[in-house]
Image (tube, rainbow, N blue to C red; front, top):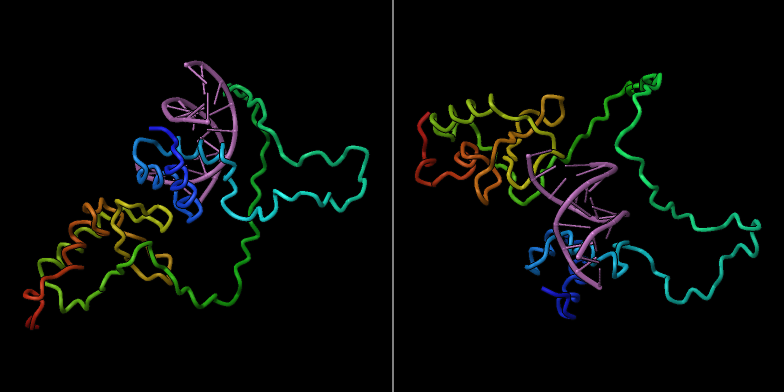
Length: 202
DNA sequence: CCCTGATTCGC
DNA sequence: GCGAATCAGG
């Protein structure tokens, strides 16, 4: 595949929309995200945002005539990158402890804890779930990988476990079902057939 | 482990 | 110009 005007156009549009390189590569097909990133750089679109200027750079730097040559480019070129050798010289490296002075008052609101994606778990009242499913989830929660928000991916179960306001909060994290946001067990309690939840005796 | 963009460098 | 390999990071 080559970078035809059309493909480049698509690239520019999607990149401008904030799409990831992999998403763009997937859309275009025939190229990898590396190819997309490489092209983005060659096109000079690296800085996804800003750069309102560029073209009419007529206006010279306000600084009439700074230091003899201290100006230069603030760009820090790629250093030769020393070989991965690395000497064994260990630095004293004093571990500096964070003041960790927690505010005396509780931050109170810890509102948003939403994993990515539309569907939030219905969090049905326990009495609406079938005993089997309930037993199943409890069993699964023991095996939960207890992932943090940042560790969630497209293929990890995003079922929240615990109270978001406390330290005891994490996400299931087990392998999610294809296309579903949750693992098998949690998908089971999240999406119940109407038939199984109607007047569940209690 | 999954993913992100950035950079390098042989082609 | 191209993009795989690699790097740096969440």
